[in-house]
Image 1 (cartoon, rainbow, N blue to C red):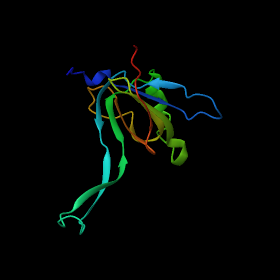
Image 2: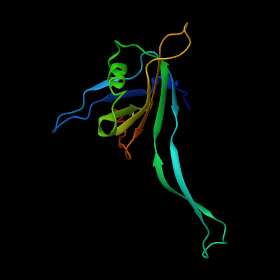
Image 3: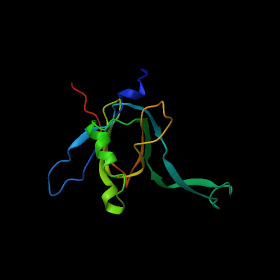
Image 4: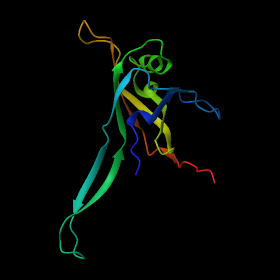
Length: 148
């Protein structure tokens, strides 16, 4: 089994397109040093008479969320796009979000950006960049195709 570095996973952000146009994506990668999967699962435990009463766990919902950290570069199109949402609320924080995994699978859908930080930190450090992006529902998953 081959191991692959996390940096080979690609993340893209863009505005939600109008009409039937395709989203214009910007790759969120430059100066990003850490991406953390902060996903949440809601579960429910119940025991049943058709078993021995031991509670079974059902996953009720999955909220797939990623936290990005790095150094802010105001010239990077992806960071500039996220920074432009810093003071927005509600629907204005909605974006298109795409992840291309190391095996080639693509996950894509509408998402919400929160916890945007493009300033702050120690005086001797570069400006910080942080944001959290969570899909609003299960993303569309396109499996990688392999050539024959």
